[in-house]
Length: 380
Image 1 (tube, rainbow, N blue to C red):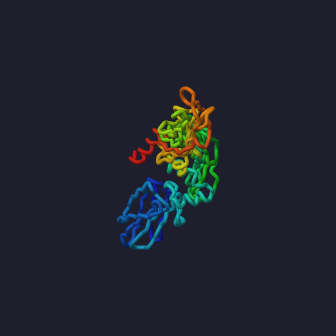
Image 2: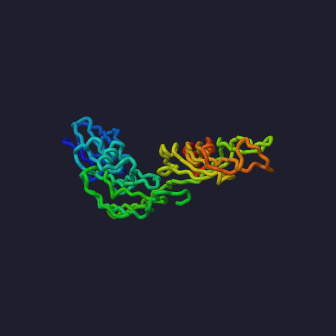
Image 3: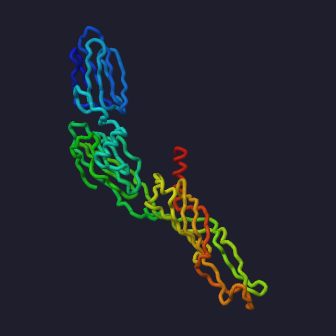
């Protein structure tokens, strides 16, 4: 409860702190005329206000209580009282400051990152001065760093804070599809945003920590998403690599040229730096090299190439098909063939066995990737 007493000289405040949900009672000393009272607060740095007739009035601070709370008298003596969030007093809070119970704005977060050299790649988990959750990520990617942050009253009394990491699997530097700490005190620093401990990076599973503020402990758990580096891929496609055969035609050795044609290849696809299907980076869409063997002729033909995708899991693939070509054994092209049956041949690796490959790739994460993409597009 915050009580504001007015008189012809201003106001007095009987409270140490203002927080969301607090009730403010404005009381008035006898004055020649009945003044009106304006209460204004900053919510996300945009000020709003309300006015009401002067008697003993009660006003409940909104949940998005911002930088300062102001009581102004209109009519009668021209007096004003300003209550700063987190402290009692008769002075205005600095421009651009934030409250201890409201999520900081973009400018405040940018200044905080610059101050402590925290890049945009570090995810912030923001708590208020009581440890309550202000802005926590629903999940983070495997290996992504998370920094616990608290909003502290500038120049005010800070509570004792203890951060304990209770669960954080070791991150995996290279993951094949299917695989799947400490205590810190908040330093007394002038900014209102204060990092608690160091950024932590965890493997797939969950990151859990306890934030102890005074005698109260807040438990937090953040899902850590899997990041995959190598997936199994199946590639139905068409190979334009030549498929040479030699036959006896009119008594001589004759070359018959054809294309490998349609078939199915299977192999592995590499995702540089790993792919997180819930937070794909630009290179995850365009850089997905693969190597695959032809299923019905695995020792004689393979393809190397790259796949591009709009969601992961399903790839438009192109590359180079490499095939062991045939050459006649004991005979030259055009030479008379007096033997029985087929012309004897052997397989060799040569530049004549190269050709374009086009296909559609389906990797082992196709279900999860397409389910996530469909969910994003339908708002599910």
